[in-house]
Amino acid sequence: MDALSDVLKSVRLEGAVYLDGEFTAPWCIRGECGLPHVRERLAGAEHVAFFHFLTEGACKVRLAGSQQVLEAKAGDLILLPQEGKHLLGSDLHLAPMEGDAMVTPPPSADADLFHMRHGGGGAPTRFVCGYLALSRTVFRPVFEVLPPAMVIHLGDGPASALHEP
Image (cartoon, rainbow, N blue to C red; front, side, top):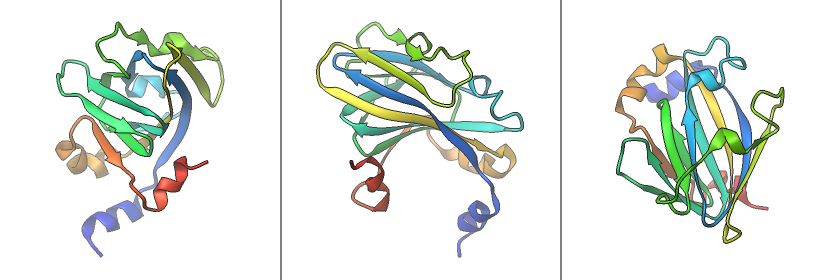
């Protein structure tokens, strides 16, 4: 067994899905990942990694301050292991809507799952968003080599069943 497998077996991850999003083209939103957004739920977390799992459609993602655009489609996982702002959308040249402004119930409400709907009525994109609380001490070597945003294609393997009806 390799060292990474040993580490992962010894670590207890805590996480949750917190957002169900549905967008129709054209659309663009600005989101922010970071511990302050989930501090109440994860009081002991040292680090939080966020993700968006696309269940339908496609979108583009770009980190604030970057020119690199990543493309994702149904079955892809967008992983954001670092804190910061990012854009998601069918067209990243549109003026972005602030993500918190479109959430129902409002983010201050005591709800487990929030919903977000937005767009121009065109092709739909749906995804769920979540987070994983991680031990910075254990995962520091991994964080140091990961890019700040990744699109992971789940392909036709067992994980692909997560987005099938």
